[in-house]
Length: 371
Image (cartoon, rainbow, N blue to C red):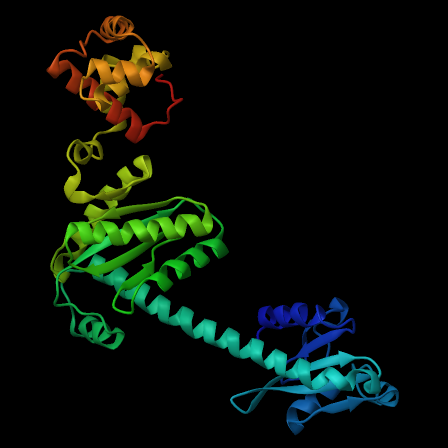
């Protein structure tokens, strides 16, 4: 219960309040944390008495000569559920430190209770995470699996859809804060678990697409405003609980697009993007060599092509967006044709160019160069 990590945390917290040296001792009388690191591991006879007697022990200068490992001060028992789990010791003249000894003991016990609560919460979260892992891995449900679902309060009979979140953040503490922040925005009916270091999974009841989008839009905005980092979201389709692994694969596919676009992406909206995931790196490079390789060295032509596609081949809107004359736009489109042997004014060729841009955006960075 009172492990060295927690004991060291307690010592750091208490040291903020007082200047005196602090020690934490286990019920065997061994110092496990101290502001004086040289005392760690030493036996403390006074603390052992304190633990056995379950009451405060005053250590005097005289006691220093006859008790092993002690210094003048106070030893106070730390209680958890009315059982002694350790001792906190404060070094100094008893008459000078007795005024706040009891306050420090109470504060330390509060830290212990808080740590215990967090540990239990972590165990509960891990239970849900382990269940979700098994749920997505196994389609044949055993009786023990169904019992676990019942114990955890998970409904395996109503259709659900799986939503996958990703954050671009390696700080473990910040990841936990973001997870907890999102958790606080959800209801108890939502099953929400951590998935690896930088991803979360949300299971939600089937709602209309617009309802789901508006809900996730608010959640995304709130999270990004609070932490100033992007939240990527991919959404699988609604399935029966026994087919939840399919919704996960769909959400994973949608998330890969969200990582590129920074938008909320529904799997059902994917078209060409569905094909991109299965194209090998070798095929991708060959295709790009045959299409837009010669455009990569011209940001101006690349930007022109993208806008021409975005504005549905509208010469007027594209030229206005580029702040150029329409004749200049025609000139650039001609240069694109010369570089690629594909005419962006022709529907078939433009589709090939569009697919090339999708491949480039989905698998390479903007400054990547082909070998």
